[in-house]
Amino acid sequence: MSAFQWPVRVYWEDTDAGGVVYHTGYIRFFERGRTEWLRKLGFSQARMAAETRVLFSVVDLTTQFIQPARLDDELVVHTRIAEMSGATVTFEQRILRQPEGAPIAEGRVRVACLDAGNFRPRRLPPALREEFK
Image 1: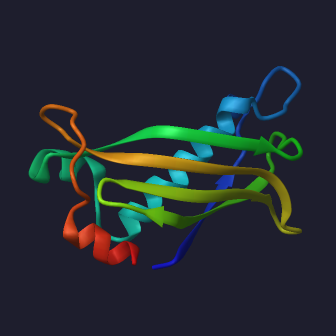
Image 2 (image 1 turned 90 degrees about the vertical axis):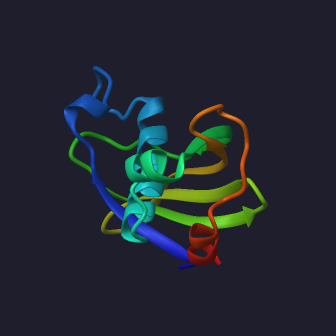
């Protein structure tokens, strides 16, 4: 699967006193996009941690804020894999306002695959690597 889209609506809890999404809200939206992509592929992060002792940790994140999202906006988070190595995956993500598709934020997020017991890097599970191709 080369890309994934996840719809998000802006709630009061996502905003500051002015009704604008607080900067960390976009990072949460990116996280939801990646998590829901894994779930759609059949990979529950809780089950992976318990059964295969695999965790993921963000090790690098860059974000560009293009324009503000506001209370009640309907957004869509686009997620795609930009790079993959033995133990890391770099995602490129975009948040667009719907229905016009106006860009809100863009980010590049590198996550490391870790052993759940000792938090050391480990190779991506073969089944997940195959889905990400």
